[in-house]
Length: 316
Image 1 (tube, rainbow, N blue to C red):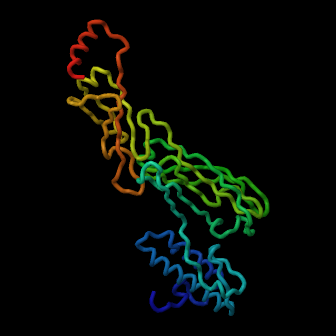
Image 2 (cartoon, helix red, strand yellow; image 1 turned 135 degrees about the vertical axis):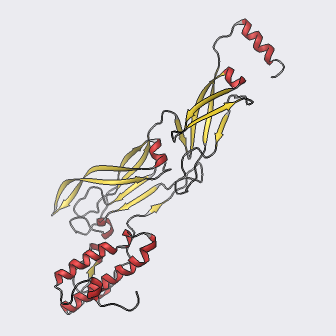
Image 3 (tube, rainbow, N blue to C red; image 1 turned 45 degrees about the vertical axis):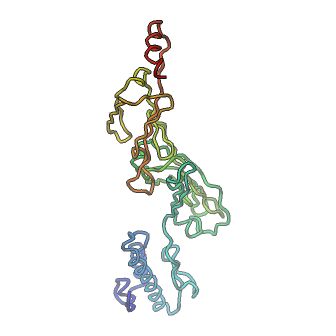
């Protein structure tokens, strides 16, 4: 930021401001300039401004109090006893982290774990501000999505109750969280809300994990990034040709014709790029695999047998 500016100018307050006004200005500015609230293009500027605001706040307190005080950057601006080792704020941690796992069947799968971090979990204290020593196992819940929601992506709002510690007492509180389901996510993908589980005195709050569950689709079955569509076809059409129509997962109508092809048991028609989106791989999709089940007649007359035998005896 070049030459350091006057701390009153950085905090945008007049000189000789009261400590209360200094603290109020600091809290407002750190919320405005926190790097996690800025896009990548402006993040360097936000980080520099965030640091300058913290330094200006510290200088203002030193001038008013006449002695150095440490600023509790983790809790958002509280003031404590002298401690020179904390005269600089730690590098701001991202609000969420993202981990990926590879699909066992194909290398082109999506991330499996998405993390959302709560403020109490970052600071290492529960809501009652007591140091936490233990952490209970996470609470797991299912988040059901239709195949269309996993294809297009969607936003889900979830509500759940949890125990929280308030002034030493445990009370029940309703929480509401939003989850952005990205196109291409598969069943088993985990969304973790760190520290959003039940609280107990002397313990870290548990994590809450939501796991994507895929609702059964009436027509399509998902296999990795591919979609499988099963079609039943009469034997006569499998041998002599067939035209049929169906709807893709996008809702688009598709028509296929078979004239020169014999649809035999195990035959599969692959339509590249008509499957599920590949998570984190823009404009790429899996394939649509059409698998045919041939419907054989249960009875044949003697005349039909003779005709079929005559027609096929030289070709098979």
